[in-house]
Amino acid sequence: MQADLSPVIAATAQWLTRAFPATGGALASALCEVQARQAVTVAAWLRYPTAMDAALLDLAGPGGSGRLDWVTGADAALGEDMDAHAWRTWVDEVVASWAACLLTEPELAARAVAALADGSHGTAAPAGFRRLVAPDDSDRNAAVLLRHPDLLAPVAGLHQNQLLDRLNQGRTLIA
Image: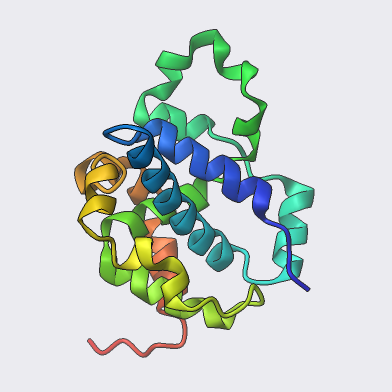
């Protein structure tokens, strides 16, 4: 059974593209959005690998964008208008953090896509996430802010260790 994570994926991708917008016109915005959505999809499928995990998310809720807004300074820009955006309640902080890690580290993104085979969301071929794992020049130019390691560091750092733990499950580390 495929769990429906689409509200969390849509809201978290929207948060990322608003926090780190495209540089350019309509095509750049579309390319940036695709990259954010691919990163968030991979992150969400890793975070919630089974239908049961997704069902528990539905019960508990994703947590919202409050801490992410604070970390990036977006809370000051939103002011009192923060409550006007109900979609923000569907943002998942851990998924956003993991997606930020994937957007800034291509090797980690490739490992994450390969790890999707362990979950119940399907075995999406890496080609389905090409803009995430192998962005071309137009992808990189459109998402300069979205892929900038220094800009995303405060978000990526929130839960990076959990992502690394998830991707290293079953591996033996040699000291």
